[in-house]
Image (cartoon, rainbow, N blue to C red):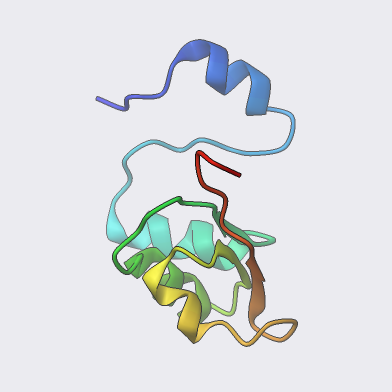
Length: 88
């Protein structure tokens, strides 16, 4: 099952589409058709979805805490945003 609450889905439905689990072909199509991939994680070892989005020509907006942030050429293939912490 997909672990997002209904209240979260309602609050974000105006700006984001939540697909839940999808197969490989549908994922590639969704990434190709997306305006951008947004991965604002506080901690992410790598984030394979970033490479998948970039391979489809979709820019990625990621926090600096995402391991794949090193793949982003700021302003060209996407954007890196400052990570926040509990003390920020």
